[in-house]
Length: 200
Ligand SMILES: C[S@@+](CC[C@H](N)C(=O)[O-])C[C@H]1O[C@@H](n2cnc3c(N)ncnc32)[C@H](O)[C@@H]1O
Picture 1 (spheres, rainbow, N blue to C red):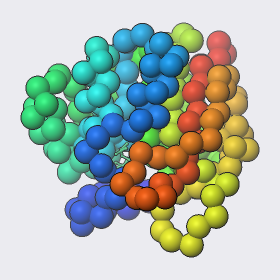
Picture 2 (picture 1 turned 90 degrees about the vertical axis):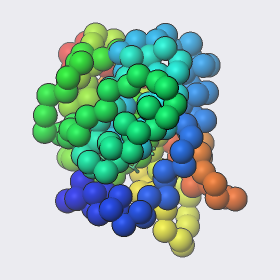
Picture 3 (picture 1 turned 120 degrees about the vertical axis):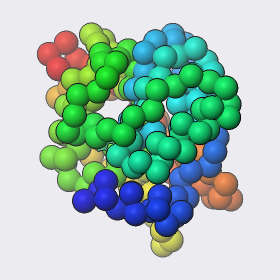
């Protein structure tokens, strides 16, 4: 299972996505779109760098992750940074989430982890279920337009994203970018901003 794979990776310290700083795509989107502080859900928050940035920018943050190790670290990091976030071991696919409904959902590299259209459709349905009317979802997703022969994040096409999210979300923007990274040629990413549909 995807979640078990991540748990093992945190245990082994094999977490190349974990940079200890927020992703510039989050900062740029929130700033450029003037997304107002609200109750936000960071799905698959890992060790909390993006949650912490959101809290420092006046969002009320709940970060969830299926990895206990990641959540323990996130709690420590928030305390080191003197910010208030709520971090919970929880699974977006299975459980209700405290604090729901949210004005904004964010995920960096969680949605893209799921391999089939059906799994990603269910993921999108769950995100929509936790959002308030007109709630937004910002998702950072590995971009399949990059050909590479080294390991890296899962890669999805624009069609993969659209197929899964369209029933529940109106896509406001889908922009080709790259992930925040320490690598000289950072992995390509999609930055997808969506609004919950009235029927979702
Ligand atoms: C690639 S990591 C990214 C972590 C963090 N967002 C970051 O940018 O550092 C994906 C994260 O999603 C979490 N995850 C995977 N499936 C999940 C689920 N169903 N519910 C909650 N978290 C999940 C994993 O444990 C992992 O921490």
